[in-house]
Amino acid sequence: MTDAPATLETPWPVALLSNKIRGYIERLGTVWVEGEVTQWGGSGGNVYGKLKDLGEDATVSFTIWSSVKSRLTADFKQGDRVIALVKPNWWVKGGTLTMQVFDLRHVGIGDLLERLERLRAQLAREGLFDRSRKIALPFLPACIGLVTGKDSDAEKDVIRNAQLRWPAVEFRLAYAAVQGDRAVAEVTAGIQRLDADPEVDVIIVARGGGDFQNLLAFSDESLLRAAAACTTPLVSAIGHENDRPLLDDVADLRASTPTDAAKRVVPDVTDELNRVQQARARLSNRLTGVLSTEVDRLTQLRSRPVLSTPTWIIDSRSEDLTRYVARGSELVERIVERAGTVVDDLRSQLRALSPQGTLDRGYAIVQLPGGAVLRTAPDAPAGTELRITVAAGVVPAVSK
Image (tube, rainbow, N blue to C red; front, side):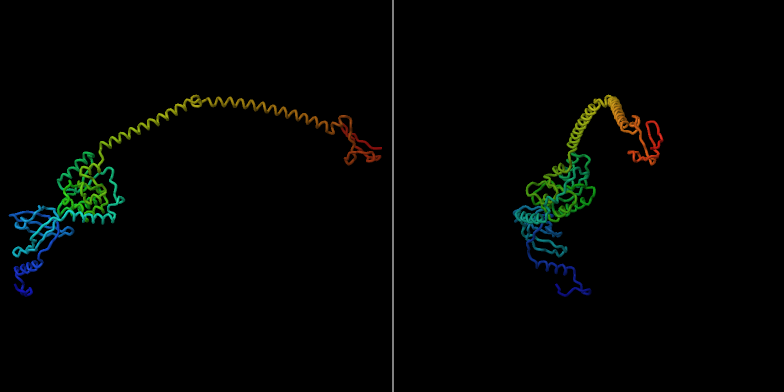
């Protein structure tokens, strides 16, 4: 193996490059790594699989030789979270990298629970579990978005029970892996796609239960944050009572099973028809009662004299008017008669006090030439022309 640098004029052979890569990799030695088994297959007593990072999109292949597999005391399968003692192994002829496993152990359930509790506490502090952010489900969704495994029992249960309760309901399906390394990305993508569909009124994420580790995808932080950001009401129907995934707490509604989700989301058409009939019966009874009351009231009004004999009020008022006119005429006559008597009395008094009355009794009025009344004899010396007024005329005279 040469240490001369590779140049355009002196390039390395492929074998030299491959051997140098193997040398670099072998220096790493053995390391403990943690990840999720996303592929597990046996051949000739050996196991060939893949190990995926728990948080990032990174996967490596591994090999467990039969001699190592015989020493493993536990059973492993796809979806398990494990800790592995591995040594990188570069295959020079094929130019591939694989991890040779020397020891393999399950991640302790206690460790997983501790991580989930830390994540639960963090999300709770951020308010993702608060009731105030929960969105109320629509009374009657016209279209339901369903995120679930293709041809799964959960899919069949939700659709069958929802359509039994309300046959007109429609579905938008987003198929996704519900366990394994693809579950988080596909379920998240399904939620986001259905949330962007304006015709979807509510979203159900459904899976028919499973063991604790198979449900870990539904406690993944990135999936939970996508669910929290969803503006469409979201229902979690994972169907697992013990050690519930965190999606149950983030969702707007938790259903115990996919069947329960269908019952919680869609009303029963029979129950609703019964409620409509009951409401119609109550309205009919109320309306009948109101009409009956008003009919009785109209009957009472029509039985009153003013409505049974329309001319009654005119006749009664006519008699009153005749009485009032007669009374008025009588009062006017009395007043006129009384006034006539007063006038006669005043005339008599006037006549008694007037000068003409005095003249009629034989008296006369003597006036001087200037018209003044003669009161004393000295006022009319001899030769004064006088004017004497009697009851029926004037007599001229001269004083002596």
